[in-house]
Length: 434
Image (cartoon, rainbow, N blue to C red; front, side, top):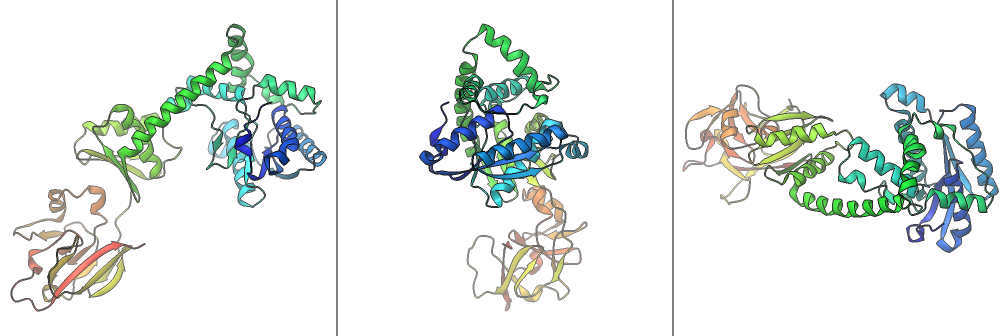
């Protein structure tokens, strides 16, 4: 069995995920012989899923005995897959995978090990690719199983090893193993592919698995290249992401996925969400759609912007000079000797600000007297200034009742402008409170 040795070399403490089946038994047995050459400390992790009753418990006991014989320290944990299935409506396979990887994370975070090595092999990879194709995957789904995942903490050194090679290794070394009876239940889609579909294909196409592997490698390279272009097309900020309406359709879809992940929609997106975002291209400016995780997407002139929705903050503070934090933003109001052209710094006559004025966010009915003359509803003024709708509720204002005197970082009202009679000129700046 030819493992990916470079993937394992000098990785510190590597724990093999051992179920007791042929694949994981073969991996831990081989690594127990190669650990010195690889420069690693070998451990193991076993998860009892609570699915098959006593049989599942017996399998874990087998793993404990195997690890003791190999002098390998074991991290063991039982989880309740049926409970997660009932609670979240997941398939048994998906629930088991979620809880299994949660245990893997715990093993690493607790300091038990530095990495987890799983026994996924070439035949698993082929099954995954076919499974994804049949579900209607994108190009990324036919790239196969990655040799590194979960931030590089999960290692898969057997991806070039076939199931037949594993069977030969187990037979040659007379290794004991356990068999999970659910592996033969063709009611599971993967089992159906492995037990019925793939053998039929291999009977006609002998090099089927290696051919699929070559295809996956090429697909992964194409996918990486297109994702690289898409990443350059997305502007990322704190809590939002934007990309151009006119992007090529392929890059647009990938940009949408990158944007969704940036604002917290990591696994909860579907093709329909990408289609809904795409539909915004032909929508009126300001059109907004709701997405999962309290995220919205809006048509911003020639861009699409995804952002985390925030409600209006009701906090307010009395107007005064000095530095203060209001609605999560740092405000600095101070005396000014002269007007200097600095980005977002506003100058105004402090004596023209009523003592009853406060610093707050916008409210219904607010009005604003434009610097050049004329009074407008604040909402209409902000639309004229092309301030995106998602940003309007977060703007800080100086207001006296419904009369807005100053919009921090944007403009002052004509009612507080500096003139020849000004003796108390103030300046103001604003920044996020980080």
